[in-house]
Length: 448
Ligand code: NDP
Image (cartoon, rainbow, N blue to C red; front, side, top):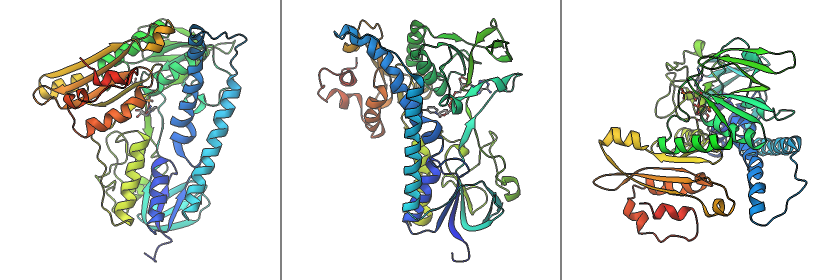
């Protein structure tokens, strides 16, 4: 090992890269990380974390409305976007500092510059300096995909959404996946007129149809518009600064802002992958085996750049397994089965395991239990929004194949429900558990 400058050189200090680097260093490896932006990556700097803070901020709009039905007199209530934005960004600064500190405390050397792979065991920094390492880990993440229509440069992505000077009065969100539905809720609560457009006729592909339908219904009732089967034709900037968006199958739409939320593509450009001979998948991600190893034995990759499951906790597990296997003498692979996930829409959605359609396709027939209810808080608040919980079970064994939910706090409830699904429990196990009354989650043990 002493022949190299480092045992491990990581490119990219996001969730996967930071975890791999700090654990490898804790196992005694000499580790360096190159990061050209800020330490923390998409999730911490321009993704999950600041987004969740905006979701909290946005939810107060409904909470304040609901509060009047609980007897509160609220007058002179105003919203200051810049105050929220700056508070969120300053917390992002704090987290950026914490992540940097974590690396430093573990003696990981940080190069705040771009690194390119110039050999199976060599990287070249933007400064021209070359560093050698026994292993190289690519953890460069992904970036928003922007459709290439004329005028696309007038739009923004989630990267910019956290830095806006003002909330646009009218916003068109392109895409109907995670980011689109989360920002639709956020902008809507901040009083923007929101329209979602998608190339297909559905939203949140991959989630259970019943909960997706419920979100669509609730979003329409709130006043969010949807345009399906719509492909961008062009975006024209008008003299007054507004944007006129032309799309297939629909009339042109005048808005103040266009937010692209049409998926994310792996960051593979300019890394020297071709010269190092690192193979890519058909989708342009880095191809890896179950140990996150590329076809070049000394080069590994974790996280969104491998496009396996684009979720932070998965990248973290991949980074941990990589470090434990190579430096901790603890061979580990990531178990990708039964990964729970959530969309922080208004209201949020969460799911684990097979959807009803997937389970039916796999097993021929399934048993489905549901609870379709109006949360107590919504009743008093005169909010006509119903929650839906759904359990998909094997017909013979009653083993739970999937749980799907939409309703307040669904992601919080799902995290624990997912333990039961992962453990292979049955509907009878849920029924045997006494309800906590009155809660929303008690519906999970009262499904019919
Ligand atoms: P998603 O994959 O969730 O959704 C992409 C949307 O864009 C879909 O509606 C898709 O349409 C559409 N689309 C895809 N490609 C194109 C294209 N070339 N032209 C036009 N439309 C297109 O992506 P997001 O950008 O919302 O999020 C990226 C990823 O980040 C997610 O997959 C998720 O893994 C992660 N993420 C997770 C969050 C969470 O855990 N809460 C929050 C935010 C992001 P169609 O339906 O037809 O495929």
